Length: 161
Image (cartoon, rainbow, N blue to C red):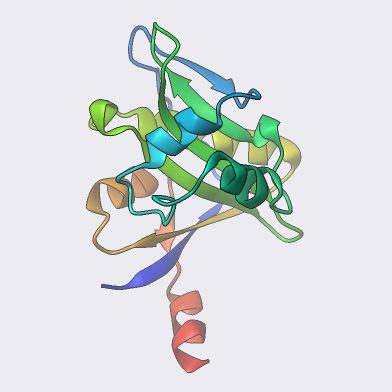
């Protein structure tokens, strides 16, 4: 298993339409438990997190605010997928992409990733990065569809350290 970075450099974002019945919105106080449920089973290291951990690790993370945590929400208002935009000094960062197990396979990961990327592009970033693992093939296909490429240079640096 290999952990690696992927990079997107200023290019047009692909066209995408949310599936019928879904909308996008950002974090609101009270979303913590739903965010945790959405991430559960995604092997993101959040399985043991509490709502206090969410507040510390997400809302307390440098470069993250509530308006940078995006959700795809179904017609009943249930959070189905999430991704976070992190504003770093040199580049934007796509963080914590996850879909609730009941909603996987509905392309909602694309929806939240595009929302994050639009936010970061509007913020002024021409370079956006993310981290993933080689066994996350559905996610990798989504990232490639979005225009991300595997960053071989960062892999070489991490193996040299």
